[in-house]
Image (cartoon, rainbow, N blue to C red; front, side, top):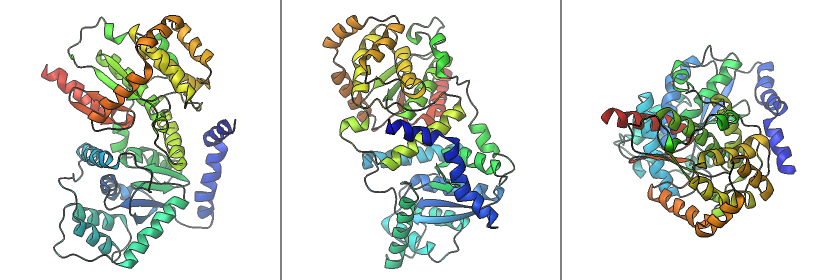
Length: 432
């Protein structure tokens, strides 16, 4: 009950109005110019991309930026730091290609990082100077180097504390009017808010073009539209399947899954579903501040994509187990897509608790699937075994969380990278 009340509050218009009043309207009333805080880590690839884009766009905004350099993500937040680092550099270069930014050819040396951090203390605090520091640091352009100094360390510790106290955890983030926007992928939402407050004439064409919807429809319509993609009658040119690794507890998995189904239907290719256990059921921990941001971010992404998202009925534990126990039979019967979609809809749309096995059985029966047959099949196809196998496969892709997608020899993490998947599919078709 307490969780549902918290979710309801996070969704509420009252909360949004309170934050805007506190962090924006009071300042406007007192005659202060609007200000956004930008938290950057000099060692963070996505911070490098964000500062370049903000430098390019800042002239369009009628507000000031306060740039705060921090050490990085708060301790205990990043899962599999080594794999995350490899992914972050790869993903940053995808962004660089998409927006014609300076890409990453090599990581900055320790001497360059120290010098960049020291140099920042000598410059005027603005986006343009921050961009130059990043370019010099990541390009290892410094010929003379500074040593680490206590004032610089104290400065970043202070900023790191400020980030935490304001309720966030990661670099490459913008704080404005009580909301957070992480990375270039969320500049669309940032610009939309600026437009709402008359601080921007229009959302930048760059982001309007790159955030066009591809006929995404609400999941409620899917049960009437989804076909058995594997048995689709339309001839397929591409022979490679689209594989999605997902978790029922992940809001981004829900958004990524709806888009993947839509993509597979458009391209007439097979969609293979690989469920894995949520991080919290694998012994990992996710700080509450991160869970809160993920949820709020998923809500606004769902709205942008036209995907229905009314709340969250946590399936952690029994809910996930109950759903996974029946999945193998649904898959064997060619109804994996419909089944997972129905489970997601129960969690994020209809407020149905999957921890109650009767609710999962009801979903099953509505798909004309037999629960007894599924139980017998489960004895020979144990959900724990195939979930572990799926996790091993994901690790072999050098990825760890969800949603993840693979097509041919390419793999991507995050529902934001659906457009990259479609590019690969189109290239494959052209080559074929």
